[in-house]
Every structure is written in C-alpha cells, then in structure tokens.
Image 1: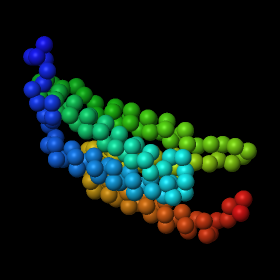
Image 2: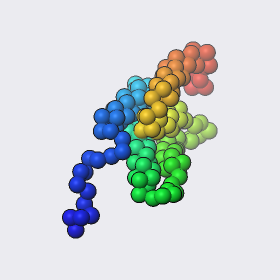
Image 3: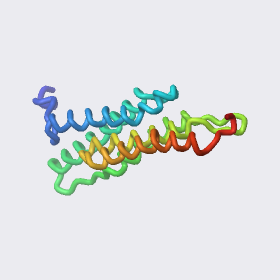
Image 4: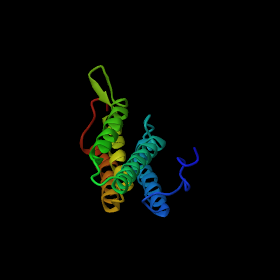
Length: 161
C-alpha cells in the first residue's frame, strides 16, 4: 500500500513558487474584473469572479501537470489539453448563463455573465503562465467595464430613465 503513495505530496512539474504566483495573479485579476459588478451590487460580484478565475487557473495547472506526467510515463503520450480548456469554458458559460434574466421584454445580467466568462479566460491564462495575456485581458476588461460603461451611461439613455 505504501508503495502506491507518493513520497512527496507537493512534487509537481511546475515549481511551487510558480504555482503560487499563477494562482495569486488569478485571484488578483479576477478581483479587478469583479469589482465593477460588486460596486453595481450584482449577484455575481467580487467573490464570484475571484472564484471563477482561481478555478480556471487551477484547472489549467492540473492540465499541465497531467501532460508533464504523461510525458514522463509514456513513450508516446496521448493527451489533449484543449479538452480541459473546453470543459472550463463550458462550465463558466453555464454559471454565466445563470446570471442572465429575461423578464417582460428586458434582458438583465449579460454584462455580468460576460465578465464571469472573461474572468475564467484570465484564470486560464494565469494558470498557463501566460501573464501578458492575463494582464492585457484584465486591463481591457477594466476599460470596457468602467470607462466604456460610464460613457455608455452618458450617451445612450435607458428606456427606464
């Protein structure tokens, strides 16, 4: 029995400091994206966006670890990392769809759903170590949510205004 247990429970192909960096950045970037939804008192706010981004980063890290492990154990490994990414995006899309409400001819929650989906993508980028993509995606999200959001409110009057 003890022969099947790993000797080092924290042994990974990715250095531990790099794992911590990727996960912390996923949390920070998810928070930056979610803060707009929190200020607007939406159901999916700060914590939801953080958790979506963190979960996506963890799934990405797991994908990499499986790939590296299979490369070490098999002569010709057969793994498809894209499947994990597809599963993450489908799961996040399911959560995001839950924030969208249609009632009496109006649709609400689309921006929150889209920002959750974006938080998942940023988490995937952090988990994969693609920091430039994560930073650029987060900066663009802030521009869209805050700057364009304010501009939209001034230029496009709402039906209920």
